[in-house]
Image 1 (tube, rainbow, N blue to C red):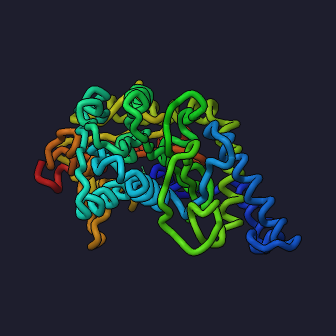
Image 2 (cartoon, rainbow, N blue to C red):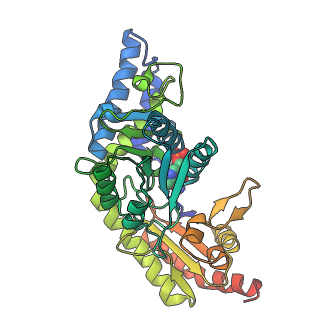
Image 3 (cartoon, rainbow, N blue to C red):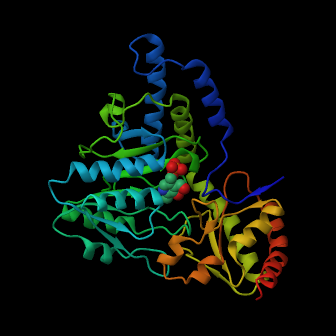
Length: 382
Ligand SMILES: Cc1ncc(COP(=O)(O)O)c(C=O)c1O
């Protein structure tokens, strides 16, 4: 049996999600835009899922726009909100540790003549709200800050950032893809205007996610050609995927505290073991401002891509940096933005726990790691 410690990349499906999706694939095959009863059946399934997702994030169901995932939600949010607000100004602010699905739309907007200000992260992996404040200008149209980082798990100071954006009347978008289902991400009391997430990060299916658009926030659609999702996202909806997302959202809402407790205990067991058994290790981003399931560790002088391969050979899945177009691995952009050197970032691994991970698996990894790290260090000439 393999040991899967890469839940920030994706997560396994919950049985309840699979059962609901199978049922929807079979029974709710109608086109949700059709006026007949078969269409109405599919529409009902979508609206039920919309209620469940709205319940998880504390918004009205009409504020949820279903998408093909967080990449699409982020593209829609950045380009759609920016373009709809261009009369106000053409300046955008974002943290320097965003996911590529934020980075690249920002670059596309920059190429169209928008000014983009990036706010750096500190050595702890968090942005400073004062630095966000300082970056705001009279023509700022949109601020985008992730809720939690995909590489380190660092939880960002969303509350103060939301307060200051609201005080200036500037729209705030939050990429909550890694935070949803792991920490509370309710918007009832938080002035966040838009929020992105993806089902497959919280035991739902791949290829489906959502964008929350609060109130009457203006947005230019990205996909055109239909009135679905109230004209904010054209295209026949992925009914079984949305049904699966709805069930995953309901389970996440119900089990949030229990999951956080269970996963943080496993993650702490892993870190305590690593720290006590292996010399020359350092944690990148630690409690209290870190996701309960995420551990990012630098193993000094042990190249992370080689260590990943060694662990993979022993049946353990972890993550290192990001894949390049060539398929090779490059070190984490987040760690570099936090001021780690290239050599340090090259020696970091991300281990993220979730559904199906237990103490025996963590102990097995702890039994393997010291010798593997030693071997990789020796091979690297350390
Ligand atoms: C922070 C963050 N944003 C966006 C995405 C993209 O999500 P999706 O896989 O749904 O396109 C990811 C996925 O890794 C992520 O971690």
